[in-house]
Length: 110
Image 1 (cartoon, rainbow, N blue to C red):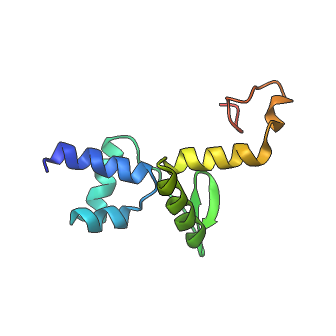
Image 2: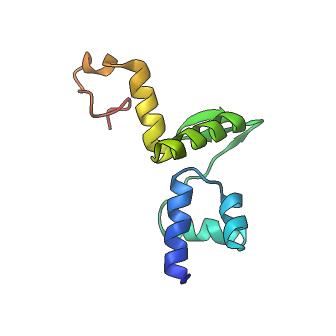
């Protein structure tokens, strides 16, 4: 696999929810090199450690919850972001239709 193909695959896996360490182990390169590749591609999103939780998509989750979400997203054949977005929209239903933002703008209105 050429480096450009490898880097694209690393970015895809990372944006779907895989960790730096998992990517490093799969591609047999350092975690720091993975981070550099992701930064260059402008897809790196650092998480902050808060005990046994990590900030992910702006929400602090336990590792076991994140792993369960990753598994369900893979089963559904979608990215983690899409899966969580659909899950949240399903839970709040049409709640944000009432505030004038419409149902396709998401919870942040961005």
